[in-house]
Amino acid sequence: MLRICCLSLLLVGMVQIYAVRASMTQSLSNASAADIKRRKEAFKVAAKLLTKRGVPFNPNLLNEFDWRERLAPTFALMSELRATQRVPDALSGVFIADVVLFPERVKLQGDTVILARQLAPEDENVDVTIEGDHALFIFTIGDPPKIFGTKNQRGLVGKITVETSGPCLLKGQAWLFLHKYISCNGIGEWTYR
Image (cartoon, rainbow, N blue to C red; front, side, top):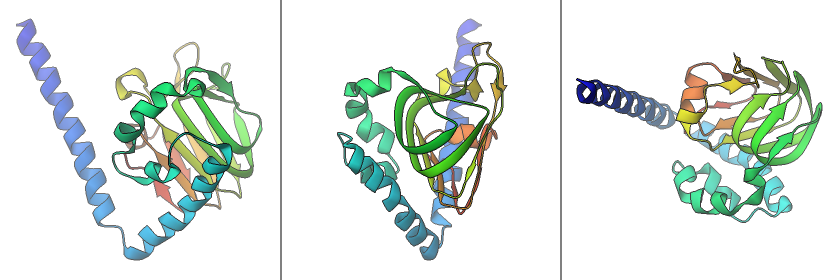
């Protein structure tokens, strides 16, 4: 009986993963040539910031569909991805960490790239709002089974809302976006793998 139950859960999980991948692939194939060009142009901002920071990988790989798998060996060697980092109220530049902790309200003071395994509010804040007139690129690389939305120290699940007039890229955990734990209201909401 236990084996049947576990097998059922495994099959349900596989179907859900397949459905997410299929919907993400379909949304990418429906993108117009103009959308793809706009996304590539906007991504140049992130690539420039990451190159200036001196990351040990080609930033353009983050724009690939299988970026997490391709960069996993490099991520495993990056000491920054084993630390927790609190972001300031005014955000600009590159933030790389295992866990990135946000205050309740964050103002984008410049173009920003975040590469993290997990995003979470600091202290007791459950919902985080990030706003400003600059580009924001968030790449989450954590394992989906270990992250359930954003969790504070007491395990409360909240959401991150981004309000920007600049390009906005949220990439890495499709199910976070599908379940509305994180959303972006900017020039582009790119919520694929």
